[in-house]
Length: 117
Image (spheres, rainbow, N blue to C red):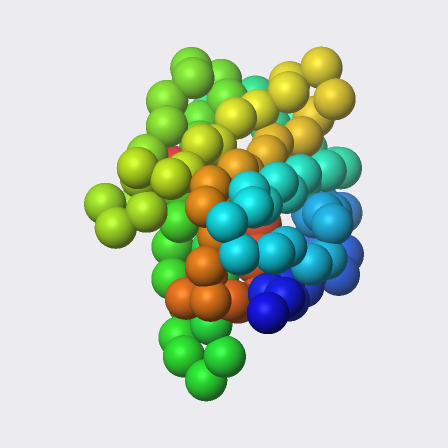
């Protein structure tokens, strides 16, 4: 069994773009590592929070985690927090997600997203 996931293609809102990247396939028990590269705005702006969400096949969006790089604040979904790490690399203007011990229930489209704080 191989788990498939796909990240979003570049999305733009005005001049801001978020583009996520990762390995594309993850085997059960392995860890998923994703990176979201942001252009057009600094992730250290206090005006925004930076998120990871996912959408399992045939289901709605599920929020995973949020980070505030300007102050280091992090928030996690209670159902996933024991397996999840969100982090930022401010020098590269990007943030990342690690989801450990993947299983079939983690099969989904994974997206990075910005929201107003």
